[in-house]
Amino acid sequence: MHQALAAAGWSPGRRHAAQAEAWADALSGHRSPQGHAHALFPAAFETWAELGALTLNPVGAGTAYAPSGIVVDPLRGLHWARTLGDLGHALDTALCPLGEEAGGTALIALDREGRLYAVDHTGDWYLGPDVPAGLTTLLTGAEPYRLDLPDDD
Image (spheres, rainbow, N blue to C red):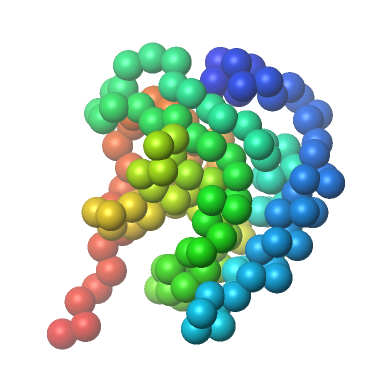
């Protein structure tokens, strides 16, 4: 992952607080047509400030799947408030958008504790216990964990 971060222009101490604040304002001001709002919390803001506006590209072949690039831009999830709210409720946490897989195939979100998730047309996925581990899952093509919620039967 360090190679992908360096290639994207990241360096230790990178901090874009003004951009993170603009994203927080945009997300907090948005409501879905049914009135759903985005959850905002410190872990999201800190991650946006450090990694925001980066495009991370894989640097090698995938281990289990094809590796994916990541676009760190929480506004890519602007219209996902209900989906993230529903998934967060099912997981007993709150989720906030981080960005998306390159090509727009999945929304990437993080929770209050900094765990990373992906939501795509095939389901919901746990990527890792923290942002670096979750990004590494995508960048290396490691196998994510599919979230199977219990049936309502």
